Length: 112
Image 1 (cartoon, rainbow, N blue to C red):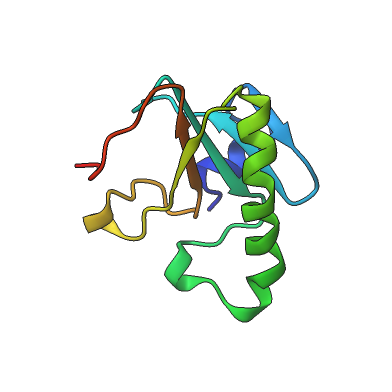
Image 2 (cartoon, rainbow, N blue to C red; image 1 turned 120 degrees about the horizontal axis):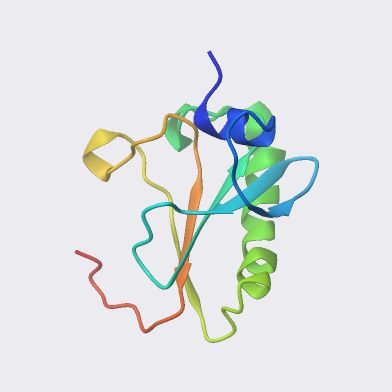
């Protein structure tokens, strides 16, 4: 069964893709927690970060190196926060690893 993000990339679920390359894609979160809230995800599904394998290392590195590019596209020149939820207790709701890129305001700490 395809994940939500696979269906988006395959055009089965409409979404405005704000960044895409051969390895990953980024969309706006439908439930934003900041003025800018983007989800960056690998096209190859990885269930969650703790399920990543050594063979996923290049994909994970690519994702992290893509974060600043997506942040720049979104106008987050004054800073941004990166979050990866891992598991239900962390707030994970989609079983396809993704990176939240948040910004557009001064973000507090701790986050909750």
